Length: 267
Image 1 (tube, helix red, strand yellow):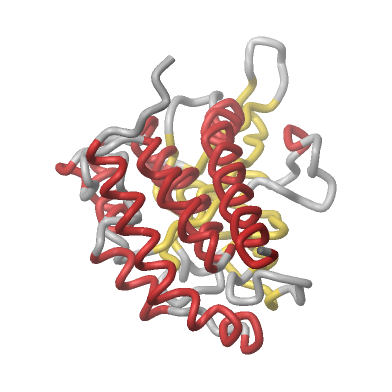
Image 2 (cartoon, rainbow, N blue to C red):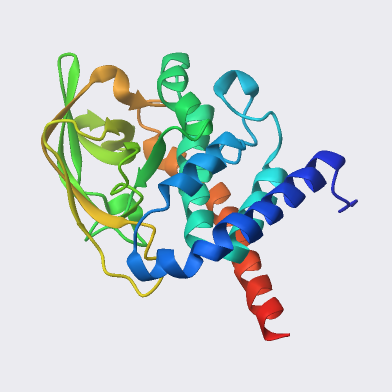
């Protein structure tokens, strides 16, 4: 197997390394101390195409590949892990789920602005009784004519506290809609931030990554259009797990970047 980077991948790596060293690193301590999201840096990341490297240009991306995106995450994480985490969630999870499973209308409405860095996407799976056993989700979505009524909560939602976070993609159990084994189907839904009944809790006080907000979210009779179902009916949990495979590789790229920073600093 040839592990040599392509010319395009080398270009992405070099651009991201320069950006990390010149723009992110000088601000890293300030970001960690104040906990203030670096919206100006995130905006520049979007302008440079870092948020949508692997997606087609027609959907706001750069037409590259996932190796290029992982190189970007690795290099940014050398300077600050929270910005690598932002790319993990928005690009590796949310944009990927929209691109693979979304309708054309959903891609036009949500994927394009995220791939361009104009909006941030968030990912909701964990609950108080559904952590490692994520299939035990208790959040419910009930179909009522042309809308879904959502009730429940999700924990540890990265980025939802950001001003430019536009949606959360969640899993929810659908009482009354059964699978072949007679169990409630679990589906995936796009819930726009600001929808009545969608509440964002306080930001968790974490040991690190202070600039990356992490919050609980609560749904109380939160009503979304029927067309906000994402993907195939009954496949929501499987979809979430599928894109998490990409997310785990993103975390590995972040870890390599952080380890490289530790190594460089120790020399």
